[in-house]
Image 1 (cartoon, one colour):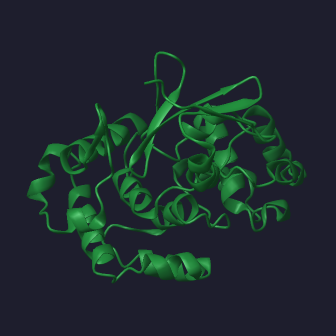
Image 2 (spheres, helix red, strand yellow):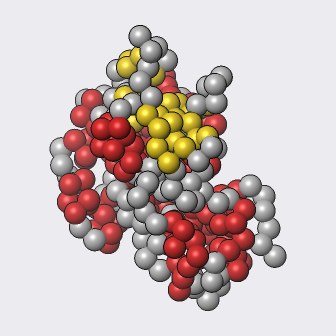
Length: 271
C-alpha cells in the first residue's frame, strides 16, 4: 500500500534541514531519498522540502494537528528577522543561516535530551538518545522507537541505564523522571505560567542548571523569551554584547540565540 503524502507551501524563512539539524533536536536523520526522518509522539514522520513545498507522509489533518505546531509553521519569521537585522551581528547570522525556526518538541523528551547534552557533543548525544529509545521505548516500525515517558523511566535505577553509556547523566535522568512522574515538577503549570516559574521549577531536578532549564523552556514549552547560554553563546555575549543584549531581540531572545549559536558553532566570525 502506497504511503499517503501531503504537500503544503512553505512559509517564508523556512529551511527544514537547517532547523532539524542545528542543535535543537537529536532524532532526525536523512534517508537515501533525501527525506528527513524522525519520531514525533508515536509516529514516524518523513519530511522533504522541495520547490517551495513541504512534503510529509501524513494527511492534512495529522499535519495540522501535530507538525504545524512542531515546526512553528505559523509564526511570522519574516518580520522577526527584519527586526533582528537592526543589530549588525544578528543581521549576518540570519542572512547566512536563513530559515531556522524553533521546534516545539514534547517537553519531557526535550528535558531528558538536554540533560544528556551536558558536556557532550552532538553525535554522542544522538547516540545516547537513540539507545535510550531502543532500550526503553516501544518500536513503532523497524528502526524507529518512541521516546520513553517519565513514568516508564521512573521505576528504573541508574544501573538499569548502563546500556546507554551516559555516564554521570544517568542519575540525573532518573531523578528527572521521578520528579516529573510524581508531579513534583509540574509540566502543566510550567506550560501555563510565565517563564520565570519554569526556571524555578526545572532546577529542582538534580543536574538541571540554567542552561538545561532554558533549553527545555525554549524547545519544549515554546517560551521564545528563554535564552539558553552554552559555551558558544556565552562567548558571543561576552564579545559582541558586553553592555547587554540588543533591544531588537526582546521577547524573542531564544529565536535570536539559535541563529547566533548556529553561526558561531559553524566557525563563523562576526568581526
